[in-house]
Image (cartoon, rainbow, N blue to C red; front, side, top):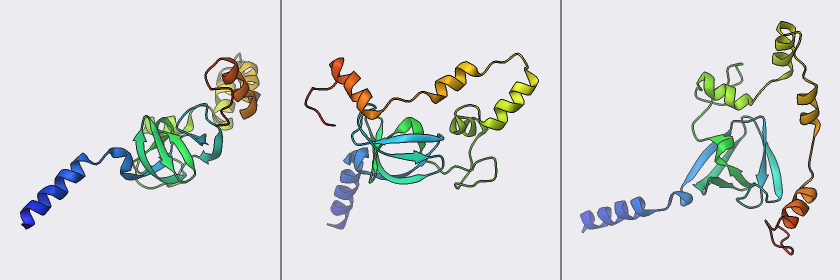
Length: 154
């Protein structure tokens, strides 16, 4: 009888969808938006910063569900991360993972690169970094394009 129970338990565990299983996810990018739904154009429910951790279920369709909202799997890792600067988030990370976590230049790297490459012009990059689109403007654009229904409040 006990063997039958164990076999049933193991079978049930094997068939359990991955979206039900919990994981700890760590944010790998400087900042990312948590969404109210598992969609890139859903309303924001908050922000998450580099190194922040969440208990989450998933991924399902590329998204983890947290208590604070949905976060895309491209912005997080399920393994523990240790940043090269000595700021520890637990575990270790490869150089490639640290680079991905930074997602580009910071002020110090830009200054160093500019000193070595005097002809580099960062004005276009700086202008792009200053651009921002509000959630309401994004919703209006998506509605106009027929990507979300007119009455959808998201």
